[in-house]
Length: 207
Length: 207
DNA sequence: TGAAATCGTTAACAAAAGATAAGGAATAAG
DNA sequence: CTTATTCCTTATCTTTTGTTAACGATTTCA
Image (tube, rainbow over all chains, first blue to last red; front, side, top):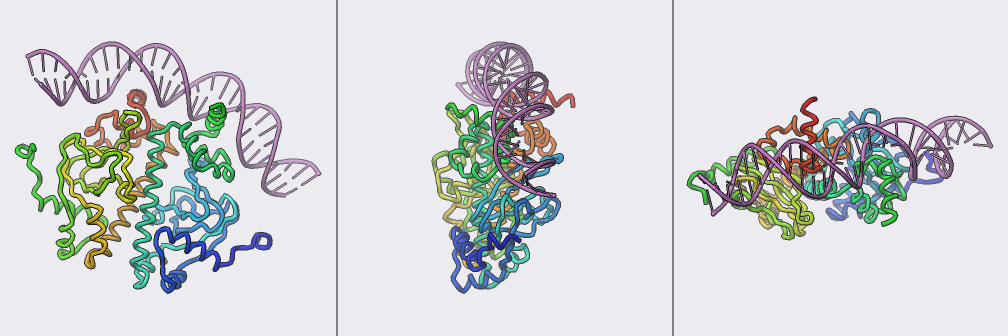
């Protein structure tokens, strides 16, 4: 699948990227790491392919080795983008993954994307694993805490800032997103319409 | 302090309420529970007293035995309310508590409020405790996951719904809040001004 | 390569929200 | 009991956003 021109990263290389990424939260000894890797799956999504689909329980937590995904809701046939995730970030329809309820949103690859997957089953098995359980439990806690902080910032931005202020903020802190993601997706992410974002951009040019 | 007319709940009774509340996440044996209670502190806030203050690291996670608190930010001298917590819920300036950074918001009692507190120090001690560590680790993970789901719903409401739709939703799911919390606080919570909420209420009366 | 789809901008109008101020009801404080 | 304070509503005016449609430019795809 397109692997001739853009070959998948060698699995070992992918695992190394993953190990570095997860080290922000927990570090594993070589022995532990070898045990852990038994529980991993690998997946490559072509552009527009889905990692999660509305109505289906999201069975995986993903680590993005390469690529990017967008989260979106279907609102009366309209796609409303709520979030993006990029390399070295985790991605999942968390609520669905955690509570085992049908996902309320889609997660779709914005470009060719390589993922390392942990299934919910395997996550439970790791928790029960004598060698790994404690650190996996801790990992689960720390990553959840990490995302709480992200969500908190996000909610605060909606409470405290105007759409224009939210735009200015993201334009400063994450200018890269505008290089990789169509503008009308970003508009949704900011809680406004694409037309409104276009106006804000024009308005703020002169400032 | 007012304990003549509204006596504090007996400590043992408070602990029982706490045990029931925490049982949504993890259950403890009597032995474990006895160990755990050594790490608890107690506090009663009068109306308008603070549990967390901007600029100071929030050292405690609180369980609300009785009463209610509101979270608010100071924006250019204006108080903007971001959230409320009530009985049987946990409350903390999570980002500050987790990351040990100065809180960016205040948490203030809306009425006389009884809290059971776990200090950050004691939380770490419990994690290191042979008997409790594993379950506390799990508790930390599960409560963080719980709040991720709450935050996710909240962000989604900002992305997907109009202020009027958000009002209608809260009015259906949490009518009790209007009985306990001034309306202009709720307006902030919905991301709009008090004047705007007043108009929405008038507008939706006829629907 | 040629047709179709995607994407950003702009315009015009309607709808909603922000800002400010004023008034009255309810509540709290002295 | 009287005076402040708090709170909600209403009015007016300005600003912003939503909606719809149209137009080119770019990209995608057959």
